[in-house]
Amino acid sequence: NAGVTQTPKFQVLKTGQSMTLQCAQDMNHEYMSWYRQDPGMGLRLIHYSVGAGITDQGEVPNGYNVSRSTTEDFPLRLLSAAPSQTSVYFCASSYSIPSTNEKLFFGSGTQLSVL
Amino acid sequence: DAKTTQPNSMESNEEEPVHLPCNHSTISGTDYIHWYRQLPSQGPEYVIHGLTSNVNNRMASLAIAEDRKSSTLILHRATLRDAAVYYCILDSNYQLIWGAGTKLIIKP
Image (cartoon, rainbow over all chains, first blue to last red; front, side, top):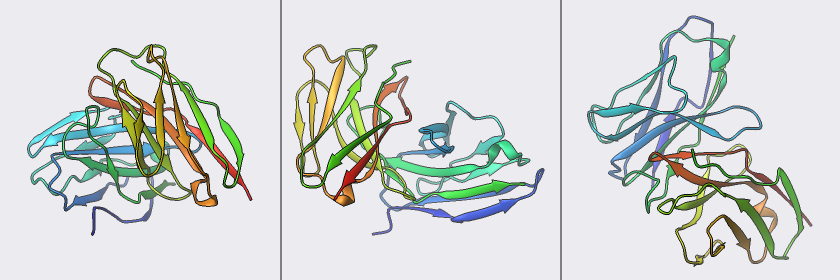
């Protein structure tokens, strides 16, 4: 049972570099989302998608892009990495929007350091 | 935005019940109350959620105050594996807004 798979688990970038964090789910979930978690804090929503071809901004979208070409995949792109983007990133999915009677399934996270 | 208030940390003895409080005085009538937990170095995992009535599942119970301004997550018999950060969450415009949570420490 794969669930939500995130790659890579760890990544070190230099300031200004770009990269894509991958997220895939095999549960046929319509809703997918990206969060970041800074030390000692809760999760903050970056972007989310309610279905293929539909994305929207969350609480902290600046510096990140997303697209949703398939139901299964929801990559997160850092356009020009900055030290402020050093964080742990989590991808999550659910059958529909989680604020209703749904629960989120999370990946194991990507620890990103920007030097 | 709907917000929650939780204690920063709590301690409990192993094999004893644990009551984790959460205040959400700005909750609106259609907001579900969600609880997730995050074990060290892992992604969060779902624990329980409810709207108005108390809820039970194999992991925990959720007691919701009659006015819905507070709730309590109950772990009936805590084990060392329950040591985690527990998050009480409401939705805000179809997004879950996370606070800093309560770090639960279980003493053997």
